[in-house]
Image (cartoon, rainbow, N blue to C red; front, top):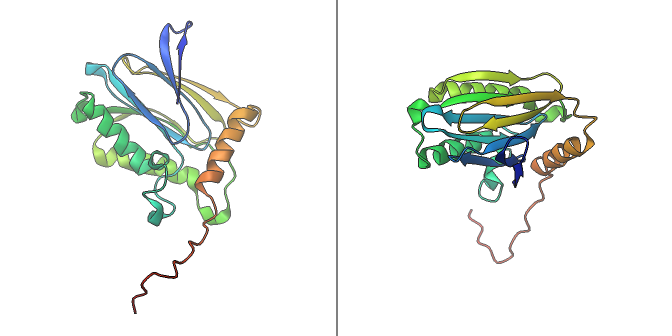
Length: 198
């Protein structure tokens, strides 16, 4: 997460990378770049509290590694963490609204990985529906990257689409993140003193 002051916006800006989430009740602007990833902006407009997450996968790839992974990178946990933090800051669950972005066909996935971008979009839609959180703006799919600015106090969102393959730094960051998420599993060495049940 990177913080800086924008003279143009006259506000403090928090830049989120994949696997991160942030909530503000002081009017900060949240900024992120998306390719295949998703970002959900949740807000309680009456109380001026808003937050955003940025995730690549709808659920765990390796359930046995739940406690050793960066939980924020998975949609289910990213959503729960964001909602929990909003409520802690004073937002009311029944007043939450959402804006949803991302899920572009930007990164190439292996055939065995399934439809990652489609799964992201379907997961996000279903999750918000089941939680009873109304969705306003929804800009998903396609084959472009997205730059998102989210004003946490007013819930205003600015969107700019771009060719992600021409923005090499952003493309490489998302590709590197994908590689970490889909890392090859190494078998754990067996402890010779361990007990084997039979």
